[in-house]
Length: 104
Image 1: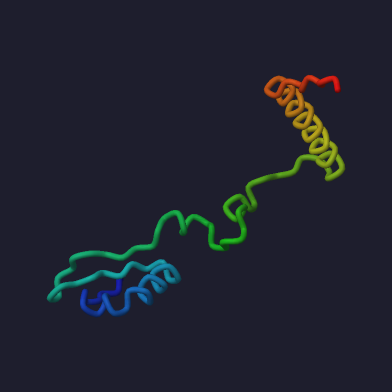
Image 2 (image 1 turned 135 degrees about the vertical axis):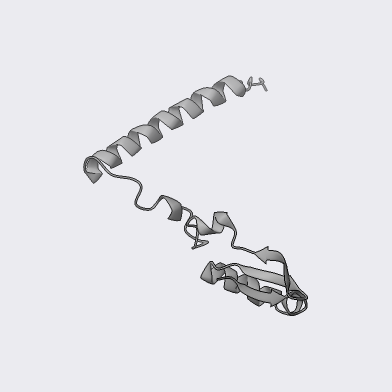
């Protein structure tokens, strides 16, 4: 069951209540004269898996399966990098024409 807190008490303890909701994932009901008027709940995006701010791939952990060995993966990555670099160079040549040399 959700914890109930009066609005007056919640004003003084809002930071602590927010931390408690995030930590326990349990909502807190705000009351006025004993009647529920609002609810503090955890943000769904926080709930989905980004618990560690420094780990951008936290939500993806365990979702990728490697079919092959690491040598094949490294080779494929090198090929992709080479292809990317050559495409980048080609686009740069189109967008930035070569400078004409002036004769001195």
